[in-house]
Image (tube, rainbow, N blue to C red; front, side, top):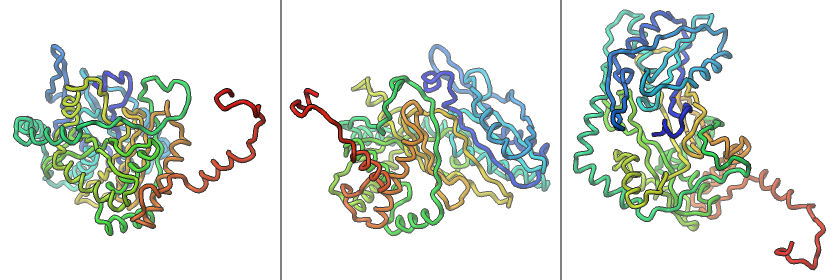
Length: 445
């Protein structure tokens, strides 16, 4: 449905790069990729529509070939990534992935994978990187390929059993109660400009890095408060979104891994589910109390996370068919580096596809276990500017600094305007006297 709604866009492309910092045998690397494609059934997935109903099937045929492209240096990599990432998949007639090997003059290089979201999530990219490293090393050292392969069909069968189980009904009851009397949808206010009413998925990404010292202080704070880093950021962004919308009851979306056991964590495919998180607080709450209540709420939500967001919407639309979506702002936390038994130097990179289904997505991630956190803001470029995003990020950091200094600060006392921005606002209000008829009222004027 997303594909149809945003036709001719690449909104469903998930593109990742693995950079390998060692001399490679590129024919062996190609053989590695062919083995991975052969043994993981998501790469053999087909979709068809018969009488308006979608069907999924698996086929042994794979049409695409793996190209080896020579690059002069890493400076040329981003251009190649853009070209691959902007490939539009024909969801009903062709392979739903493409793969390319890139090679540098010093014989280092890597792989770019572009996969349609209907058969993959970002966790899968981490599994692909892990299998590339392990399979390549096994071939290079002439050792047996002992890594077990898991089938996505097992997950499909597990989902069928879940839908027919009492657990499904319990989860449905929970979400019916949790979303009773829906709050009004909110978003981050957009800039004033033309074309703001156009339906567009075109987006940009701005990424900021939080250094290791900042993350270390934040981690220490979260340990002291017995909360997760994700819950901390959810609290901070929630307070910000609530403040600028003058609302204390609203919903923010967040994607969850939705892999409930070790086998599923090692299975390539589309597992991810999005859950609507209802934020509710009072301005007179202390921050520490608010975030602890939020943590308790998440514990309850995660017990019912298997219930699909699609089912939640369908249930709500039975009483109100006009509900388009429950949230316009999404916050995700992704740590997708998967450890291997091999000491191969590599890193991964997630390439933004230039499209977004919401107004505003915020991604917190550390893909390579660096101890740093990156915050990527994906935003609808018809509604926001780069300056808007930079201002939002500066405000969030300023809010965080206040909370780290005083965990019991009241929510109402957390200022969202950094000193520099506040001074700019105050300067605008000075020396701007204008003559006007003093015998006229404001309404008349």
